[in-house]
Length: 310
Image (cartoon, rainbow, N blue to C red):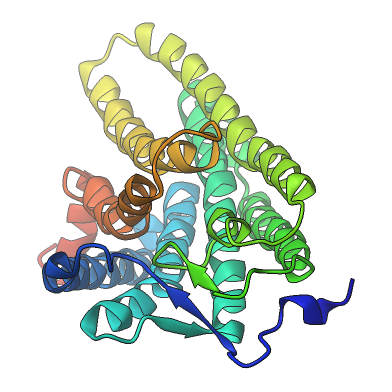
C-alpha cells in the first residue's frame, strides 16, 4: 500500500465539521474561545517572562513551570487559531498538509505534557520528602535532562502515530467529525482495518498517560505521608500551596484526556467528545497560570521586585 492512498484525488483538504451541528452557537463559541485563548497567551507569557527575569525564581519548580507554560502556548496555538477561523465563517476546511501538521503537534505536545506533569510531581516529592538532598537530586543539569526527555518522548510518540495515519486509506468524503485533526477522529473515516492503529494508540496512551498518572499518585502518596508528620503550620501551608496547585493542574489535564482516549468503543458520543476536548484544549491551558500564581507568594514577591516595590 503506497502513501498515495491517503492523498486526495481532486480535493487536497479536509472538512472539519466541528460545531456545525449548532450553527446558533458558533458566534458565542468564537467570542468565548477567543477570550480564553488571549488569557492563555497573556498568562503563560507572564510566567515565562517572570521566571526568566527574576533570579529568585531560577529554581527547578519554576523551570518546569516555564516548560509547562511553553507547552500550553504551543498546544493551544496548534489548534485554536484554526478553530476560530472555522467558527468565524462558512469555510470549515483545513489543508491536507495543515491537518497532518496539526495532528503531529497536538499529539506531541499533549504527550509531552503528560510526561512533564510526572516530572513536576517528582520535583515536589524531592522537595518535600528529601529536602536535605534536594539541591543534589534536582541539579540544574538533571532538570534540563528531565525536561528534554519529556519533549523527546512527546515528539517521538507523535511521529509513530503520524506515520501510521499516513498509511491508512481514508474514505472519499474526508469529513472529520471534530474541530481539529486528532488520531481517533481521523481513524473514524478510515476505509481499512484499523485494529493495529487502535491497539497502538491504546498501548502508547497507557505508556505516556496511565504510567505517568500512576507515578504521580505514588509521589503524592509519599508526600501525603511526609505532610502528616509535619508539626509546623507554615510549612504545611507552603507544601499544600505548591502541591495543591500541581494536583489541580493534573486533574484538569488528565481527567478530560482519559474520557477521550480510554473510553469504551460505545462510550461518549462524538458531540460530547468535542466539548470535552474543547475543555482541555481551551480552558485548562488558560487556568494553569491562574492556579499557579494567584495564591503563590513567590510570584507575588517577584512581581513586586520587578516593579521596584522591594
